[in-house]
Image (tube, rainbow, N blue to C red):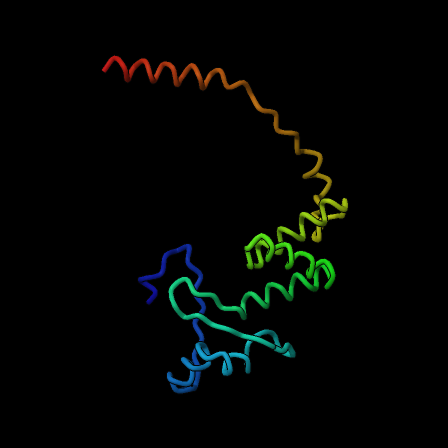
Length: 149
């Protein structure tokens, strides 16, 4: 297997002392998956699976929404879910974007503050765009050369 792995891949291998058929059931049957899904102490209320290519696993979606609930609170999350559903995009990313839009409209701080050390802040300078005429001239020269061919 190590010969098939690219240097940028991250592989986790776990061995189970259980029959292959039981493991398959634990990963493909919602009732079995609910027994072990999520962090210790959590409860999976609903779990739906579509094992077809491109299908969804609502267990992962539930976990993402639980993290958003913890970060933003129930009222904001409910509003964001309704907005995502009204836009016909029932996905955690749409909910996350709606929550961010609400936060920005209310002038709230980002949920995670990034504090830069003073030495990094001091050396950073605003990026100033330069004139693009040089690129236009190079393009014109290139186009002229190609038309001569």
